[in-house]
Structures are given as C-alpha cells and as structure tokens.
Length: 351
Image (cartoon, rainbow, N blue to C red; front, side):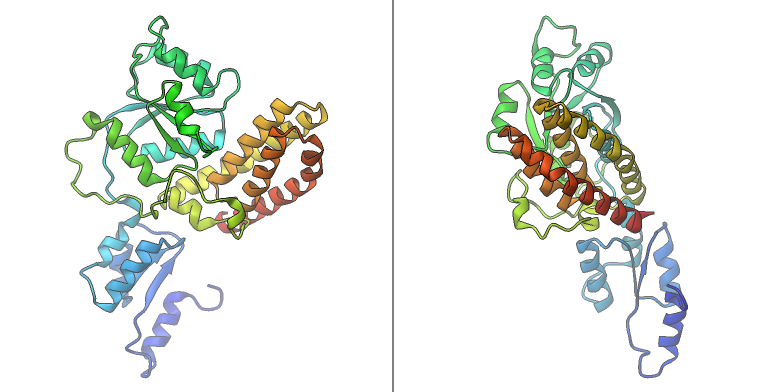
C-alpha cells in the first residue's frame, strides 16, 4: 500500500500494548512457495493471496483461531495443490481462442498433453493422424460443427484411428435438451461452459481411469468451487450482473494467476476482432453469421467473468434466433459500451 505497507503496519500494531494480542493475516497479490513460512517467522498468524478463495479464507480463519490443524505451509501451497495426473493426450476442438486458452491451461494442470483443433474438420484430420485418448468437442463451430464431426468419428469408414474414442461435448448453451442432442450425435458425455474444474476432474476420472498416474495421492485436493445444482448455469437475469466477476474467473481457473492473465490477454486481443465481425454480419443481415459471432463472444466473456456482457449477449442471441435483426442493431451501442467497461475492469484488476 502507498505510504505505509502491510509489514510496517504490522510492526506498529505489535508495538501498541493494547493491540499486541491481535492476530494478523497477510494478504498478498502474489505468492511463492515458502512465503507462508517467512510470514509466520515475521509474526503473521496466516497468509493468503488475492483473489481470495472462499475455502482458503475459511481455512485461515480456523488456523488463526486455533480450531484446526491447518498450517501456514498448507496455505502456502494452495496455488499448487496436488491434482490427479493423467498420462494422456487430449484433443480440444474449439474455435474460440479464449476458450482454447482456458481448456489448454486447465487440462495441463492435470498433466495432460493438449492439442487444439479450430473446427470439426481439423479434428477429424488430427484424429486420422495421431492417437488420442479423449476429445473435448464444442458443438457450434464454423466449417464443421461438433455434431457432424462426431458422426464422422463414429463412422467405421472414416480414416479416424479410434472410432470408439470418448468424445465429451462442451457447450455454452446449457439449454434443456442439449445433453440429449449430444448423446444422439454419438458423444459420450457433456460438460457445460464455462467449465467447472470439479466437473472437469470428474469427467477425466470417469473417461481416463487407465491413464491416471499411479502415484497420485488419494484424496488429492481439487478446486474448491461450490457444486452446482445441475449442469445449467443460473439465469443471468437473476444475477446482479457485475461488469467483471474476478472471483468467479479465478475460481474456475483454479486460482492460477498466470493462467488468469494469459486468458485475459487472449480475450482482450480477440474482442475487437470479434466485434468487427459481428458488425459486418449485421450490415449484411447475415443471421447465421450474427448468431455465430454472438455465441462466440458470449462464451469467451463467460470464461473471463464478464457477467454483464454475457447477459446482453444472451438477449442478442435470443433475438437472433427469433430473426429480430432490429433488436440486435439497437443493442450494438450497448454491447460496445459493456465491452469497454469489461476491458477497463480487467485491465485495472489484472495488469
């Protein structure tokens, strides 16, 4: 902090006879292995890094109160928790650069080698050339969508090496019937975007059990994201619609600050390009392209915690399905405004 930093403030508190019994917890912007030990040696009772994870806050409160055996060392390692490791090669089929970065970063935490395909056609080509253990397949993509690609994968006449490879659908729609559509197309399972790390772990353990590293510790701690009631996100209309939900982004990216910044950088780089593509589609009254652009921006904004932007894009997506071009035109200025707000909020919080 300017003027007087946290450690200086702590020394002043400890010198005050009326405050010597006060427990102090250091709240830092970045954390490295061993920091908690250093802080404890300096007199701090606990240590956390921002953004604060709810379960970590709970643990440090228990620790400081002396209610549990939680230690500073446990807190020091919270950004590098043991996760089950899989000796596997996975193909992520996704046309959105932000979502690609998210998938690659999350899967790498489980020790998985990740390749990316930008559409269903590229996926079929990749699966014809290399042996993969699992496919995460987006449903809506240009050139060839996930449903057609999966049908080709299952076709015994196609050149794909493994026609029985597990294919897990990834969709941002989260609409009633999506799971059934995916299964009917030949996919094996379904996971909604933005991907919850707990659900991702469950999918990996279910479909790659033979690839789990043998020395993975039993009961390894995974992301402490609260369990959802279902695969479907709550209606956006029920939310307060914050411009940037930093905590939500951090939660589903498992508190990895480097990954959070990488994803944010990709998102901010792609945002103006995607906006221009949407504007061009509106000028030419191309409803199919409008729907694709809106869907892509909505999925990316959800991954970075852009709740207000995602809410507006959902409205625009519904208008596009109904053929209401005028509604989409009218919302464009508001869309640009929310994009600028989200960009400013991300840059202020992360860079």
